[in-house]
Image (tube, rainbow, N blue to C red; front, side, top):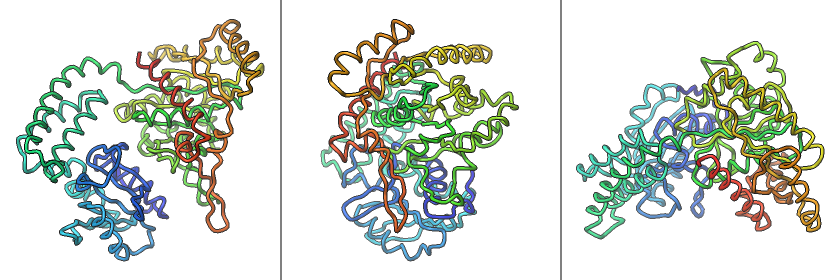
Length: 511
């Protein structure tokens, strides 16, 4: 993976293309270990990355194991921001700070309440200098520097780390970074108990035993792919896709959200359509179509974006674009394109726990790709007659996809069930009509029905239609229902419904 500074035309692109898509992964920071647009009182940081996952974030001796990253517009002089960076590092007790505008790249070290320039290079040379950058502010480098006074503990930790590379146990990995973080806190003086180091060594020994047990669990923890599909529009498909992704992310799952619908509703809902004018459209040349078109280029790390202020933590999103409509004829001529998403997801299967695909409400090429790729299927439905009449067509489409899946060696689609969504909260409706609607799904169509119900509440539309005003322009600023519920108590019931849905899905796909 390489970086081209010419691709960064504004501050937003420096953040997304340099820091999020290139730099943080290169330095070894996972999405659980860095935060964007994070505030501490009057201080607001572009990015704060930790050597280990820290939840909740508190101002204490943990901060020497972190680095502040500040992104500026390509035309800005970085030297004008040194004083503010110094204030950030001193106030938060952070060891390293990075300033970049894409064209220039500077790293400063906090030395006795003063900051010193310890590295600089041009953006065009960042690929050749990445090892030097890792040595200063890479995740592993920060941990090693903190453990340098305890070589025995460090060696033991490194041995377990090598084992954990081959383990796929999220709980075990979380415990491991917590123990390593604790050992670093000992060095930073967070613990005064002289027995803390001995206790940490004992915990590392316990982790090694747990590692051996974790090997038996690997098969249960592989990446799972879930498609959200119905050929009837207006049944809450995108609402389910984006908020289920947010709820799963809140539960600690690493989620990739793929928008494969030319309407790009998921792309909009996750805050990626910020541009007002066509010339600012930065999605047209890097979206899900390009993922399918080429087998040699445009892999998932090249296309993926971070959702914009949509959730906490933000989600990884493969965006869509209206030009997908024009691309179907081209893709139809490429035999390998139908299974290309499978191949490219295989390359990142260790990066994500769950992939959610939002599909078009039709039987088009992109819906077929989604059904060929997925492991599981959820059919959202308002259970009304028009939606029900489309269910036989959905079942036939699943059968056709399964025929192709058999040819390429994939198991049939696992149907999790019909999800009742956009359901009225009217008490009489729920008492008399809704039970009959549910019975129709199981009795007439012989389809499984999910236990969770997503009700039609005002908060679900409000969270997607938030806006911000800048000068004379209005920009969409959508929020997940999970994040919106932190701001509006009226959204809490909807947020709880998606949390219940996330739990039901996890129980079904892991069991």
